[in-house]
Amino acid sequence: VSVGGPLDRAPGSRINGQEFKLPFIRGGWAGLWRFLFLLKLVSLGLLFLAVLLITALVPRRLSVIAAAFPSRWGMAILVGLIGYCVALAPAVILFCTIIGIPLALGLWFAAKGIKWLGLAAIFFLLGHTIGRNVFKRDLSHFAAVMGGFAVYAVMSLVPVFGAFLSPVMSVLALGIALLTRFGSEEGWRRTPTPQPPGAV
Image (cartoon, rainbow, N blue to C red):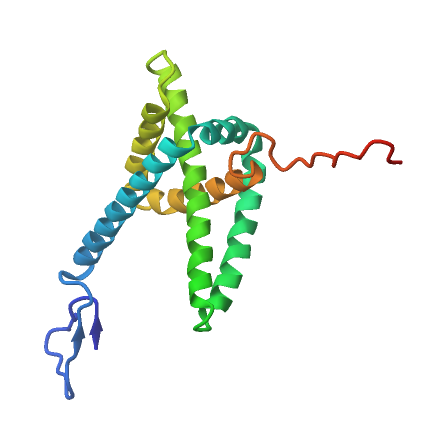
């Protein structure tokens, strides 16, 4: 039985039974790599559209998250890992039941949306830094986000390195978005409830 590639046979060898090939991807390993590369391009295309939409809808929130990232990236890693664990466990449990499948998909899309928000903010910070250091001027929100995305897209297509970059960026993005309460300026701080006049 040969799965995913050709069958290597020694000279003079003989198969007494049957030879069965299961080529999941045409072209063996080279075809598999081409297929994975195509999937990566599709994933980057969807991320581009999501980031473009987020930048158009909530540019102010991207600025808030980007401003918090340099001083809180360490905590963002921890919160991102916890966030993925918290989202993954209920999603798996819900997916095992027919009634819970819509809830599991909703939880998955919610985590995706929060991650995309964090990624857009990181792209904005990266593009803003490149604009100031390379072009000696401040880029607009769209230009900064697209510049940061372009750098990320190129780096994520590098073999091996890109495989590590994507999950690390996902954890950072989810963590920093959660830490800043999705870019809210007041964050998670609690404001005291106003007391009525004369209350003790």
